[in-house]
Length: 220
Image (cartoon, rainbow, N blue to C red; front, side, top):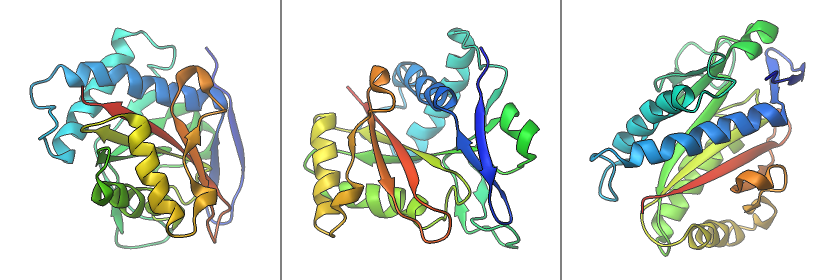
């Protein structure tokens, strides 16, 4: 399976705009890895975010082989790493949860930093504090350019500790609406309806808007 890559130039760094096929590959790898992660005793609604994320990362690697995905030899699921939002920075200003490297992107861009960033957060229906954290410590890291400054697409993973995924989406959207950010609300995916999930778009001051794909994974 050939996974085409769309790119355009950006000042200082190559701009990475994943093709729809490659975007689906990322989402399918997450979804295939989640049942494997859930089977581990460490993954419970009481577990901390780091523990769940470590288990999901390992499960994604396993899923690539188990499902014999066509992209299994071109996708590298890397450990969390320190990251720099701007080229030329000396000290890292962030740490990614699950970074992915894609050999096709590297072949065409020569970009050594992660080609995809997955930011992971715990969420629960009716929990306004976790909804706020999902936005402030998740979405806004992409919005401000702290993560994926030279990417057109980013990815959020929400570990749904309790309640429904729709209830979690409603809570996140209430937080955005309360801050006059209704245009950034999560909506059902139109780009990839077959695989479900949600998407949103957020303005950035330096590199144009970024589209976020949200995978809300139930702990049940």
